[in-house]
Image (tube, rainbow, N blue to C red):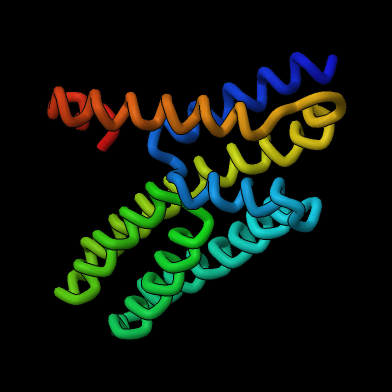
Length: 177
């Protein structure tokens, strides 16, 4: 596939990730750190570390919630860790789901925590799949001219328009929550 077509595919993927709320401005900040003279492959490294860590935490949470007596303090600590790492990479949906999960931990609601774990897992798997696609496309898409500053400006505008639509029409939120 030609580099231009792959760049279009990458742009569409990233735009959909922002538009759906899967990632937020923090993810864009990571990309800009790399582009502003940072280490090549910085985003790929951070995303890979996040995915590995999140996989491990989700497995730990599943094991804790299967115990006859659940240690909710331990569950909460793992969820807090996942929330923090999600926030640091801009994994907005995972972060928000972790916030809800923590509330259920504080109320020691085992069934609610099990449901929240399923939601966190689903949001994470969706994000991980998109990250994996992005990491496969990026090396080939960036061969040739690619003005990331122009791209991030377009994404910012799309993101602002999406937020304006949410404010103007609260029912719009229902489609994304």
